[in-house]
Length: 458
Image 1 (spheres, rainbow, N blue to C red):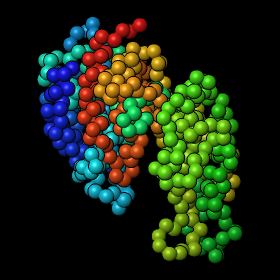
Image 2 (image 1 turned 180 degrees about the horizontal axis):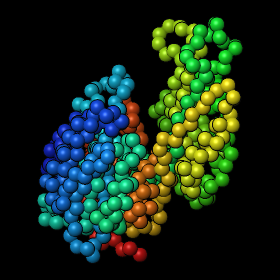
Image 3 (image 1 turned 135 degrees about the vertical axis):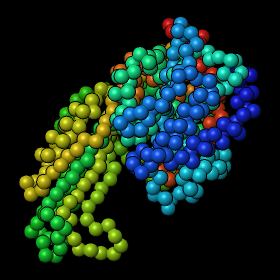
Image 4 (image 1 turned 90 degrees about the horizontal axis):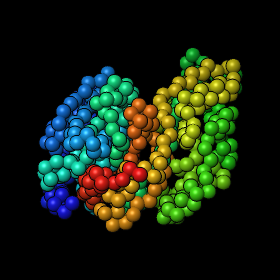
């Protein structure tokens, strides 16, 4: 690998500038006004995949944003890796909290600050440069590679599963490589072996046909904002236990071995609290912080809207109150079943004086990886060679619904090899990604492909 590593070292400034150019494209998938930017990002990646040496590079049109693919089959007898990433990003708001423009990459203290730096443009682009580096130094690839880059991950990937189902032969593979997770800590490589699922709901309560004067009508007309607060407060108890009947019926309990593995992780709870600016952690009674954050199901309010939000006072009894609620799920919970349980239970809490609308937005199944899978062994070896220390295996609290889709549609296990950090402020102002890990990520990706060619499947 020396020639490949040398090539990466020699070209790292160009690799960084290419990533910066990708980060400059405001490819926000939640806003239809940004559609042209998503088209630009897809074109950019298509051109880079061609330059990296892949064949059959194609931009596939979908009812939403495009899917970019590229393929290089070296030898059908070799393992085939499908590399997945996404080029869409979260909205940049609130703009006033950014210390530099969100779509003008700014390097400070060895990190690049920009929306999408860690989630997921910077991380996924490591693989594009790893492919180029292998081609330029060896003239080939050690295994077969397929690349799939989508532009709708941040809105639930509505067109990805249909695309997988339509192109199962085209995308058939032995495993999927994804870099959309985090390392456990700085200079502490880790591979994610479990992800929580998701059920995302919206609750809208309507009372009177218009906003009312609270002095004239207060006390005589039901206030939907009051009712919403009462309903949400009844979804969990003081011990962090979710009170939806049937919610825990299929939850797979942690084994003693799994809990011991959590204890082995180098977790500093005091540093965790300091980083977040909190005095104490909080969660389900009977579980430690890391278990609560990645191995136990949760219910959280993500947004509340009702009444007057401007400066000063306005004595209004609002007509409408709404909330967005997400539930993170663990094996073997089913997002559709949980959504149905949520809807059924919430409706029992709504008084007859209020009209209720409960909407299921999107969801995803939880996922796990067999620790004996040969692809995981190759990933572990790659991390150890580049970072000079064996990686930890950890679970992550977030959701990547397409991991379950890859398993269900393609029968492929996903290797979650992240290079970012939980402190990278993804989805928040001042998102960033350490350039040293962008550099090491390219080397780790190239090493993984090389290791995979000789790793035994037994």
